[in-house]
Image (cartoon, rainbow, N blue to C red; front, side, top):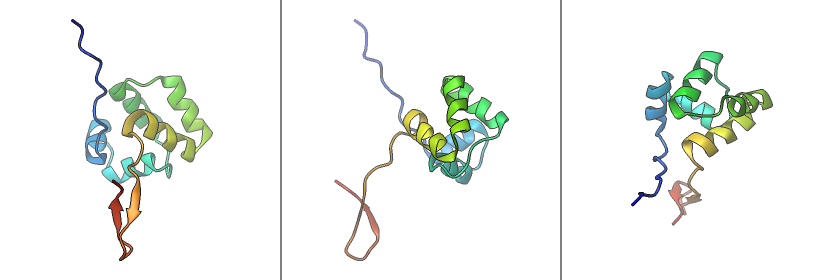
Length: 94
C-alpha cells in the first residue's frame, strides 16, 4: 500500500539560511519581498528545494514582491494570521 505523499514542513528562516548559505535576515527579506537573490543564491535555492528554474527566474524578473510571493508559495508557506492583543502586541489568531 502506498503511503500518501507528505509535504515537508516549511523551513524556518535559520534552516533556509543554512541550506542556501545566507544569513537568516536575508532569508526574511526574500520571504517578505524586500530583496531578490544573486544568481548564485538563486541556483542554490533551485537545487536545494527542487524548484523549477524557469518559474523562479520569472519571479525574480517580475520584481521583489513577486519573488517574495513565489517564495511564500513554494518554500516558506503562507504567513500565519496575526491578531493584536489589547496592548497592541501581536498574537497568533486561533
